[in-house]
Length: 342
Image 1: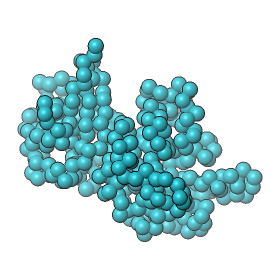
Image 2: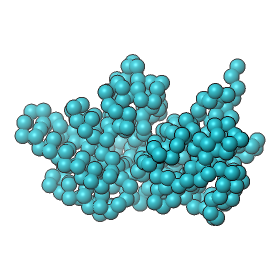
Image 3: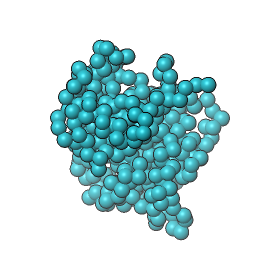
Image 4: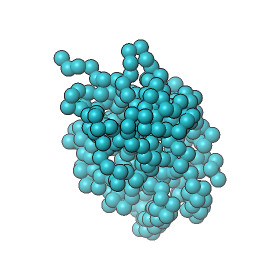
């Protein structure tokens, strides 16, 4: 019988500009000089939050604010000596200045700029990839907005808030299949949207409703739930970049998957997508009269998988903190998310 995993609590200290604190392991510990996020073992009878507070006080000499320390994800990593289960907390407020009290080196880094820092513990790598995801995920409404789409998107991007965009125009795509002029206009809109996002350094994904020949041009692909279901029998589970290999895309590409229930959310985790979008959480005009999850059910489902999960359905900027307090990485939406930010 295999040993139960070692329980570990990890703190992600995040500054307002997005920088994260990494620490280099001392020479007298396993994996010396490798970089990791600070934290340590959970003692018997100790909650994960209490453990991360204690560990950061012992390692760094800081006192975290529990009101600004949100549980994010829990992952399991299998090291040669046995499995480790890690509970990650995003911490945005603390007192004191971090110091290397155990001889470790400290470094504040942006998640996008990790290449030069040195070797990073394997269990930390997917977490840092996920932390690159902005808390706002805007879904395009170009077909409905017409000529106003690009100026309004440009206004939102110019505000400087972290944002990711999905180009998703299924009605326009359907029309384009019958009308060459519509197809040309749709492609031009996609390319203009992509260029605008690149100018503002915002990731732009393309929805899988659009031609696969577009996917490599974007920064990632968002798969619809029924398309993810088709992959159940394909060899795309069990390795980090299996989706990329299956679709012939480079490993930096992001993969998102839409989910509406527990089974679809579990599928997104098995496929090792970078994130899932779950909903709808609240009543929305696009689904009049249909049942919604509600925040409690969203929290229950999102905590069952090891992936960042965006809340969708009735979301706007004023609900971002509520979503995150229920375990969401952030919020996703169309017109309401766009209009509230302008």
